[in-house]
Amino acid sequence: MNENREAWCLRPAVLAADRGLRDAYADAIRTGVERSTLISYRKRWARLRNRSSDEPRYLIGSYRALAEELASLSDQARMGR
Image 1 (cartoon, rainbow, N blue to C red):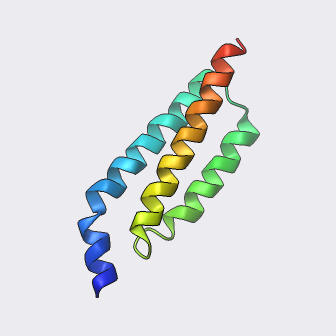
Image 2 (cartoon, rainbow, N blue to C red):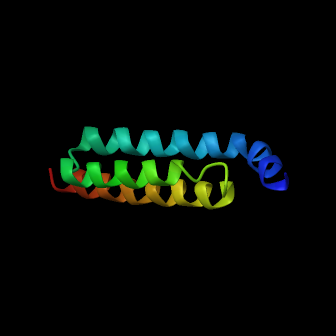
Image 3 (tube, one colour):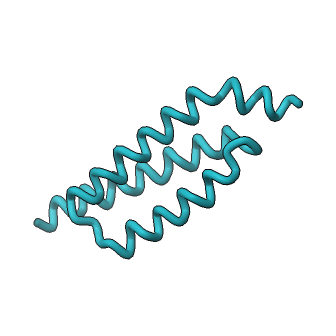
């Protein structure tokens, strides 16, 4: 019961982290990050999504970490242009 309550209370933070990851992913596409890399990130993202109600704090941190990694890849792609 407490896990569900925590998941519900953290829902806005999960949604914000998801939006941030979506934005980072879209930017990675625009900057030309390799398709194989993007596919790998999509798979990781999907696996994490399955844990959303079980471990919301972990999910938030993981989404933010993926977004940071994608942002770094986007920066590298911009410099490589």
